[in-house]
Length: 85
Ligand SMILES: [Zn+2]
Ligand SMILES: [Zn+2]
Ligand SMILES: [Zn+2]
Image (cartoon, rainbow, N blue to C red):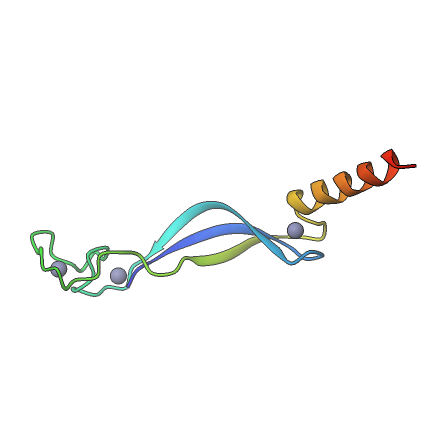
């Protein structure tokens, strides 16, 4: 089963992973996998694997700040707090 390789950023403080783009395809070289280069293009057996397996998430950048979503949440929380004072 082939896998799509995803590049992304791992935000250490909050532990979130944010995908950036699909950078590569891991070819499993199996003749029974339709996504593989080893698979015959004229084969249309239903038994062959038709989909990509689970994405392979690669950390291409490590951030020591929280992810944008978490930063936003934090800002919103602060706004709510200050508006009640
Ligand atoms: Zn495959
Ligand atoms: Zn096939
Ligand atoms: Zn986060």
